[in-house]
Image (cartoon, rainbow, N blue to C red; front, side, top):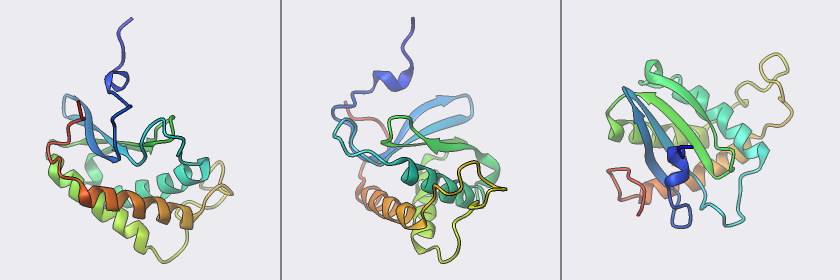
Length: 152
């Protein structure tokens, strides 16, 4: 059986960053790696869920809203996938940093934090989302790989 692309990446050397995971036609899957894999430091369900609510709302209200296909957590609890219909990777990277800053600066209620809007609305924390986004934004601000390729 053919291995899926994400299993061909050497997770032992993967650092937090923003990577192009794959390109399928006009859809790019971005690997938003917030943590080093297999190091014992994983996002909690609360953190993943909270970032998902905030990031998905802000990115779907950004200048690339019409190009957003999907945003959600990785099962391994070390990052998120962002699927965008766009070929301008640097623009997506800059918008990602802008969205993270908006979450950090958010002053108000958690998006989608009611029973009518979410199937597990009690499992949300704006503070957890802000903390994760602040750490990840610092990693992106230090990123020098503007080709967004995985390390080899």
